[in-house]
Length: 168
Image 1 (cartoon, rainbow, N blue to C red):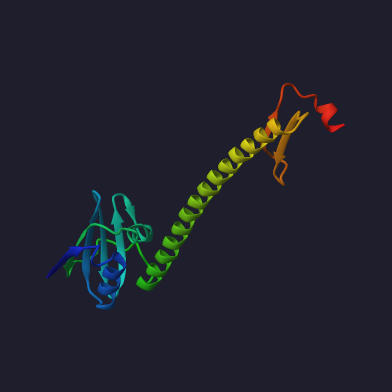
Image 2 (spheres, helix red, strand yellow):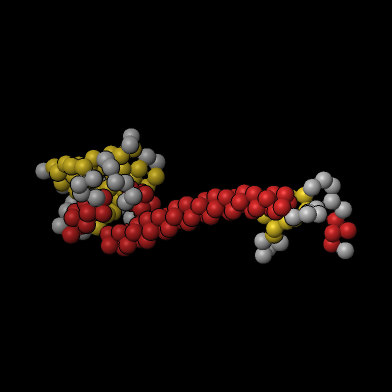
């Protein structure tokens, strides 16, 4: 007996859980963007997985992130080898943890990019404010804005500035 479908409709985690709780001896083939992963089930566990040259638990963790692709389950297929010793529930828990960490890291990168953009926009505004001040204040020679860390954010000067006469 063979079961076929789309992992958009039945996730990889659901397929693993279904085959393991049913204690099936089976082979699950998943195709995703030109890659083919194969998982083998025996006595209620995932006992082997391969994706290209990669084998074992890492394959399971990688394919848990797949949201598109097709699958087929072929019943009563013997596994060619044993490469996974962890329980199926342990695999899914670790996989979920890794997916959460990856998502968090991705969100942090996006947040860092937004913060850097905001700092650049703030520095541009400070430059504009200093330029405006330089035109409105009589005797303006130079102005600078530094962050709490001492790093210069914006600066404007009219001509050459002798730092000794300014900081003296």
